[in-house]
Each structure stands twice: as structure tokens, then as C-alpha cells.
Figure (cartoon, one colour):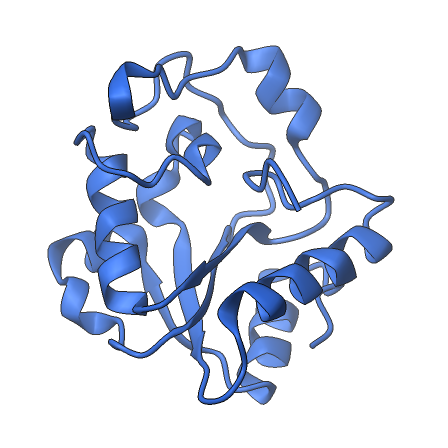
Length: 166
């Protein structure tokens, strides 16, 4: 899967060729979590806009176990990866369940999805696009790691913006 396309449309076409589906906004998925399948798989958060991001000092993420999910604007700026629509790559034993957790976390709920929290400090987080690939025999963690590794090779050893570890 080529994760080096620079425009949203190019990246979407490449992902679709590789069996990635969904491409729904965070807003729509928050309203209807059943849009995501129940199978295991990997998912991505994409940003369609090529404009510079606007970061929020206080995002919408929940305080899981009392931990503040917000970081400084300068940390967000340092993590930003230019020229890619890919913001986050995640894994799930049930895509629907995991994405439902992620959406609830983004609504400020105290939910166990602390990974990818930088997404919720983007002013346009509700407009971001969620897509996924159901997996049959592959292990989601292995595919997620491969995808992050491929991304890093093509983006000067940077992980996607909201991936804080490999």
C-alpha cells in the first residue's frame, strides 16, 4: 500500500485499490458508529484539506484516567507532517467497537482510547475522514506496524501526526 500520495484524492484512490473502505467523516461516524464493520482490521484518519492546520489549545478529547489529553501548540506543530493526508493509523480487534471508543473520546468522554489524541486538537477534527480495511487472516497490529514503517520511510522517519509510537 503506497502511503506516499500527497493529495487526498490520490491517497484515497491508492487506498481503495488496496481494499480500504469507509471514507466517512468523523462527524458522520460519531452519529452512526454502525457505519464501520465489526471485523478486525486497521483504520486511518485522513485530512482532506491541504491548508495549514489550525490547532486548538484545548481539544475535545476526554481525560482518560485523569490524564489531560492536550499538549502545547508547539508540540502539535513539531509533530505535524506536511504533504500527506494521513493523520493517524490504528488497529482494532473490532473496527466498529474501537472506532466507537475513539469517537466517544473525541467527544470528551472518559474512554480508553488515548492513542491518536492529537486529532482532537485540530480545529477541523469533525471534518476528518475515517477509513478502514477489514482483515481476515492478518494480525491487525502487524499490519498497523507495517503501515507506520512504510509511512516513516517516505516521510523522513516521521510517524503520522497523531501516532505517538511505532
